[in-house]
Length: 73
Image (cartoon, rainbow, N blue to C red; front, side, top):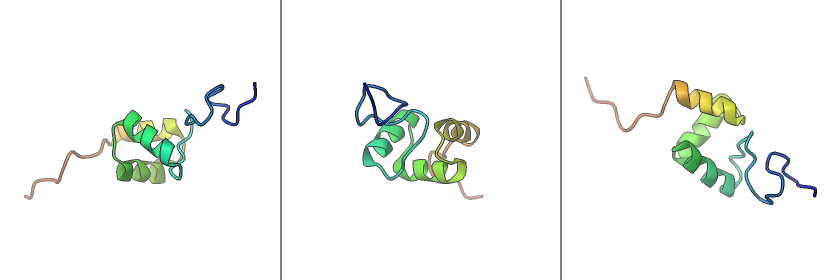
């Protein structure tokens, strides 16, 4: 059986597991849930690290998003 998405054979329409397409609503929804980030953070991570899931996960591991505004000093 042929699939248009070689990273997810047999799952038509399933997000690729190696790249993040921030222009696809389904993939954005999937990856925000999978990575535990909001859409804005996901797009910033992809802008900084590229479309590779591995690179985005590494970037997230090294610099997790803040949980709110920083206190004033």
